[in-house]
Image (cartoon, rainbow, N blue to C red; front, side, top):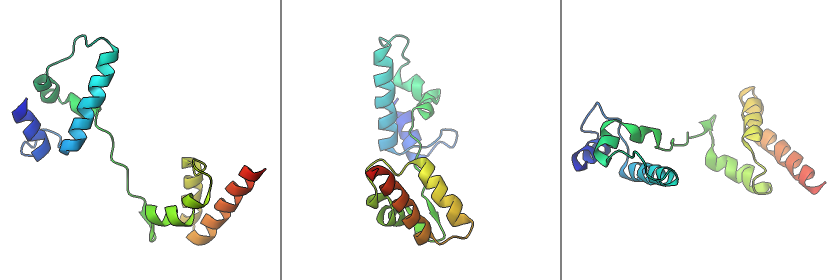
Length: 124
């Protein structure tokens, strides 16, 4: 198991999908929590779990960096997300933002319009 862990975290074995040590540890913890709920029945050893590449199903996907036309996650946080009530900047709102920006509207204008709409809705 130790050699397989090393192979996964170092990328030394091209046949094993690579993961950062923290990602792999997170996968182990998520898997352990899920199997504990099932009474730990039929749980493979760590060696088998790594060898069979089952860990890949438990890795969290790395969030994609949102960046287009100079608009980054930090820009969105500063110009929109931080200006609306917590949780009101949803995936749907963000998709709307990107749809307008990618059709040529100015990001500042779109962000301000969406912020105004969200805040007005929350005050009503």
